[in-house]
Length: 68
Image 1 (cartoon, one colour):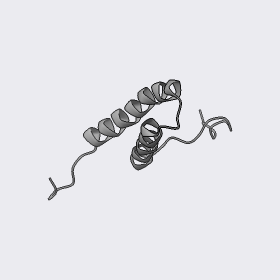
Image 2: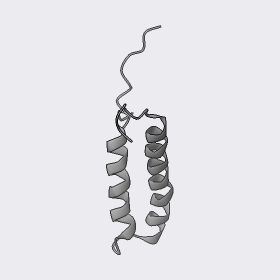
Image 3: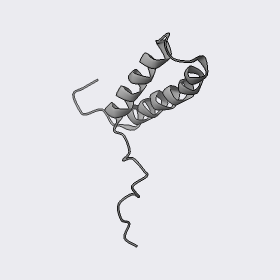
């Protein structure tokens, strides 16, 4: 079975660096006094998910020989 491209409504998956940047961007919004309290509460789980995904990717990525 051949899979085609993702439908237009789905963004491409983020790389680990993209997830890290996403978490940093969310942190900016969470710490901003101009963002509504409800929006900040919504963003916290999203930031935690991005950080958890980066940590899991880092844990699953083998360390090249000679590096620690």
